[in-house]
Length: 519
Image (cartoon, rainbow, N blue to C red):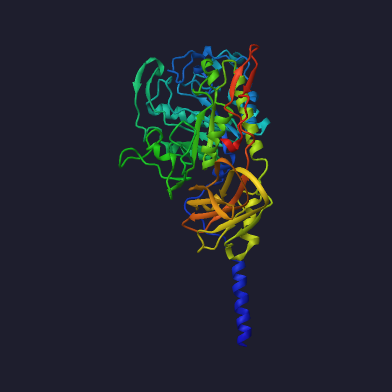
């Protein structure tokens, strides 16, 4: 009888182990819209307007709309160049601070219908929408809350106008992935001829909670970007990179104690790293322009960022759990210049070649712990599938596990990729990677936050048959969804985008090739 009870007890213990539930979520969690945003990883923001013709970055608001006439405008050329670069969507600047609306709005006469383009019958946003649909790209919109043209700016009437503009945008241009807002709030402007300085209370004037309620109602699957989110935060710089440690959670703080943070009124430098255990899931967007300016300037044709500069920004943004938002600047004809197109295409090719093969794909995996001893539900094999949300998990009490990969033979790599199942929160706080070399484990990488994506670009190639991952700090058990080893293609010396005597654009490098091992 006693023997039978012991057997039953052991059987029940075994079954309970195999039926152990999934780990409990930790901290703030992403919404479905935020998961889509994370999966995009890169998108572009497109600036075109009167500034393209006046050679300025910020229009004053008194520009005559008749100067805008992009006779060769081709939305598919612009969106297609972004897609070739590996970007998954575009944000169209529907209205910049100068106030000219690039769609035939009913809210103001200062719009695309007053330009000679298509005899005033055009709708630039509609053409972008159709191009995105054709090319399988997602679309977002930015309508500047500051309007240097409107005579009503600074009054409640303007807020009503601004909200009406957003309603038109949300109604007429399909499903959006992001509604983009910034912190430009008042200053000098034309203001219907007043030509004066107007200041507003940045914390209250726009009534952001009420404005965002319109967004939520009309575009329920959209993410809202701004200095204070509420879904995606500004990284705090326009240099295109996040902090070495970058948390997806964030608690915005106002510069003055006791005040409410708002777009244009926040301790923006805190956005670089975010807030560990912050109140909100509010990941970072890293915005930077392909050229020195956001709008097209012919003088900057020789200053287009090279593919390898973009690659470096990619590792410092997407590789740190943020998204990269790259500014594109169509010229006066309404096209991206050949320099821009060439750089984007080469960048996209490098990314494709780098991540085409996961050298860890067929590795033998040995984990120090598997949740409930159930490899079918929580085993490390899920690190090597294509699902971002299948994962290796450990028992609740095991917070610093190890994982060894036997690659079968010696492999050479210089990129390490890790991802967490962020549906369960951002859990891991530090980790290290080692290789087995000359009879010992040798550490090759050390980092902190993982989240949606962590890419480690090693300073040189390494070769090994065995690789070890050590989780060195985590407040809870892990839920790791991806482990990848990759190798960049041969890295040439700094490329130069140039035109030949016939005006043809090419990306050239020095004759000598510099292999990754010597970087």
